[in-house]
Length: 65
Figure (cartoon, rainbow, N blue to C red):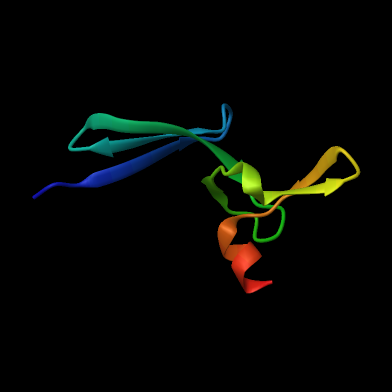
């Protein structure tokens, strides 16, 4: 039986997805400014004030608000 494991490094804000000990994906993570969870980053979550990025909101929080 295959087993997935996600390892998140909060210092570098990156994650590795492992399948049976082999790296299958590496990606950037961010902390949601609403729910405070570390989740896979998507640039659509940025909230702007003028041209400045001030908040990052995850897709789950964007859908519920």
